Amino acid sequence: MHDDRRESPVPVQAAVETPRAAGYHMPAEYEPHDRSLMAWPTSTRRELWGQRYTHAEASFAAVARTINGFEPVLMVARPDDAAAARSYCGAEIEIVEMPIDDSWLRDSGPIFLVDDDGNLAAADFEFNSWGGKYLPYDLDATVGDRLCRHLHVKRWSAPMVLEGGSITVDGQGTLITTESCLLHPSRNPLLSPADIEQVLKDYLGVTKVIWLKAGLGEDEDPDTDGHVDGVAFFAGPGRVLLHMVRDKRHPDYENLAENRRRLETTDARGREIEVVEFDLRSRPVDIGGASIVENYINSYMANGALIVPTGGTDGDQVALERLQEILPDREVVGVPSPIIAYGGGGVHCITQQVPSTVR
Image 1 (cartoon, rainbow, N blue to C red):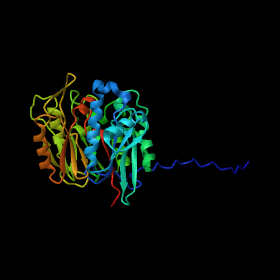
Image 2: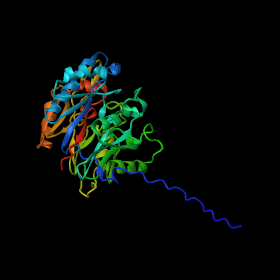
Image 3: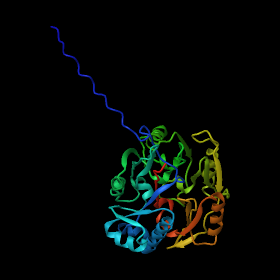
Image 4: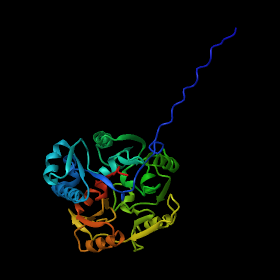
């Protein structure tokens, strides 16, 4: 018997639109910003700061006020902490009440993108608290969505764990990261390096990924497994500022020397990368029995400025002067903030840029 029924066609799932396919990319930090985002140190994590919680509040506020001299700052604060944030920051800082677990918004928040028409969007990567190091983190894992809604920007949910401090981009197709962090088994154990590169390309609009070996070691960066913002950042197109040590006995010497070798390459546009070595760090500062060494590389590029964490020691001025020589077109401003380093980060770790959409 003739059966003229036809097999139903197998439904074809439409390809997921990515930011790159839609014409978006992540601008460089040195490009103009609309504003900076920060998050207030939360009262729920007082154990992180111990008896120095109010000192941490004062330091976060000092960073916010300094940045606000160059561009507007939006400070996220838990509802219970909002009054304190307003008191410390003053009326010029916008305080937005939002549930959060912790204050490292560079890592937990969204990464902002632009297209050629000046539209703003965001790639919101998964956040697992640096491999589950601090619990709970469910509020921080969803703060990106809340911020995108607050700012009314299109949000893409990126299918990979990534902290913002683990990458630096030049806005022209090149991204630098570290193997020690992105290939750590606590992040994306089922993804190969090629898989990770593809997600970075699709969601940040880059075309070339340069893998450094590692960030700073466990003694200086115990939480992040070696974020790149502790060792390098793009200071301009084709130009990278790289943290180095000269003492071959230093535990980070081999990793940092290997990072230098890996940057002897070209960027996404075929330019040889100019590497500017920076071998200064603060003298140790004692906080609660812990020896804190401030990392000047963990700086933030605001509009027309470089905001630098300082330790309040006699070595700070030498470092600031050297950074001013390297970046003569920016105002280099130091903010004493060893308490932020005591808590596990620096100025770059607590900030996130929202790029300007004016083209």
